[in-house]
Image 1 (cartoon, rainbow, N blue to C red):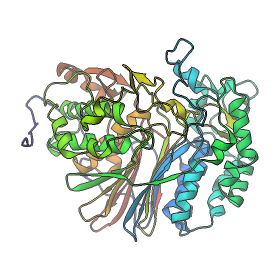
Image 2: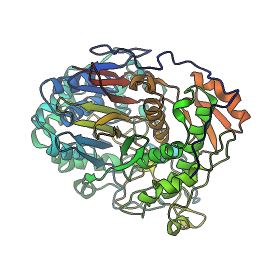
Image 3: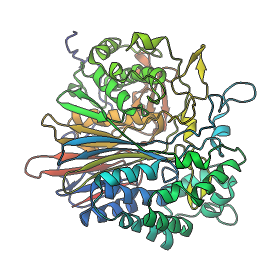
Length: 583
């Protein structure tokens, strides 16, 4: 076993300064704006991507609701106020910790491919993969939605308030209206495809095709009426009968038609799964198992970095970015070859996070020289020769929320319709996902099947990484997660290192510039407009192929605070419009 490598190399200079490198006093109440400070709460706390969703969840918690109750209320409001990212037309992953039982459970509400789906679904007439948006827009990309079923499953296990009460905040907003936010207005103005869909155009744009202005009061009575029905009758109101039929008709009659049936929708089931967990220093990191790649890939990165003394490396140094990117290349290489829906492919989950395997992978990281594109390792010799590399694209949409209730129960939930505004198809006031484009467009590579190829009933591989961290006493220490497509994994791993190695509070760690590598052509990505962009020359001198790009994370997290002011500290990404609130 290699001894830990000391990496305070001469000449490596920090290029930005974190003035609050040590946790500062945390204000009571809620905060918004940039720069943000962590928000402190004694009893309960919630952080979501929109102030109205945070407020809805906060009121549920204040009335004694559970963490799951609050998450449901927040998700339904997010469907309205952040329609580009998530909603009942999509899917979700939920990590839930039950404090009394000291039990962690993963709930899988990932969408599924219809029974008619085949591996060549996204191949053009010449046998080559379709252009991405040719596949996305319309019915071909729509998977069977899972959000309501997974919310209902979690509620039956952990809900406290009446199911119908959780729908009231969203119903009021749908019927009375809410103000269009600057972020929503900006996305509406720049989206090419949404105005081409009649139902979406009528709702999101005026008669001249101009996006609803910032501050415009947007009402959605159709959605409000639908929520009233689901509140009264349960999720089956969505999955059976006329709503399911309308989804099928919309998908099948689109200009780029799909093939979902009412039987596909009625047959959807959310799943309860065992989280994927592993040690990192004095902590235990837990995340989603397959069909998400998030939990395994985050654990791979952290375990490969564990031999380095990250706590002694400046967060703003080229060295920190170098090591982080190199670990990312190796982890994403394994992700691209081995990870998919484990009910369809033999994902070597234990082997991929085995510490001896990852120690061997870690030794491929040089402290002063970048590797080119990484190749997948051999966690399981029998599996290595069986799979081709994936070509799936994950676009930066999705939403994340975290909740801790007054009993200490906790939820870390990532929720999505995939790309911004999903398939652009609208039914009863909500958008349908384009989740099937998270499958690999090519079903084979060099004559070998791709683990994440399209198959009937299969769940596409995800990058969503809702995460819960436990301390050495088994107490919840941190909840974190983010939107961002395949970059989610890097965003979450960065924040974990910020809190666990660099001693930052959760808000400071979230606010760190984004960086890393997804092993796309071996490139190392630095966040445009951030201090990280200034690292480009130093990293290029180490052999990195550098790309300075937008990396718009939407991290939301909660951290346990001990000592005289014991309780919870919450953070919300300054790159977006979310806030934290608690008591």
